[in-house]
Image (tube, rainbow, N blue to C red; front, side, top):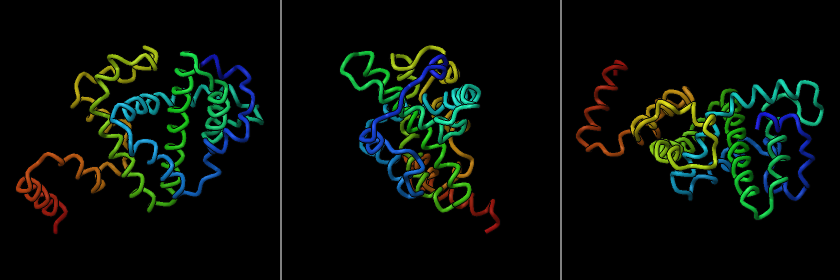
Amino acid sequence: MFGFFKKKTGVAPPIFRRLYPLASNFSDEELVRFIHKVFATQKPIVAALFLIALGNLPVYFSVFCNAMQDSKEHPASMEGMVAFILDAHAMYQGTSELDEVNKRRWFYLYIAGLLRIAHARARSKPELWDFIADIWVLLMDGSRQLRSTIERTELWKPNELDFFAEVKSEDDGERFVESVLLPKEIRYHEKLVAWQERELSPEVKEELAKMSRLLRGE
């Protein structure tokens, strides 16, 4: 992928851009709904594969910005990178194994770019975090599938999995995503807390709630 930033991708046809719009074509609410829909009906392994893309995105974004400093077609911004990803994705629409692998890789990176843009919008419009928390509840299900996904995936390359080297178990995956990938703004959001406490008894939940109120001085 690093070398691909130096190649001309062409521009995705208009019909493709209607299926996979740029972030600038979405309102804030539309953007969050679009991302949520990707994971809402899928098994956790899809979220796990996506989390690998999200973990690698900062490195790829840095490389992209360095390669595209003088580009007018794909400016050195997250929006520009999303456009580049879509143009690359459009080149792999055949039925071969190569096309299928690349199509999926670029799609996950596209959604990762959109999610980063959604996070940025939420920092200016905090009410969006409540909707973004719904997305992250689905992604946390995938966090527990990271270890098994890493062991058998052929979609991501070994160097792309190095970021997750410390994930040795389901619990490791959950802790890693919570501490490294989950935005700090929703780390203690009630929806994420409810997910964390999903297997606790009502009595234990009540005790934790009491402790939380006590710590807040209520």
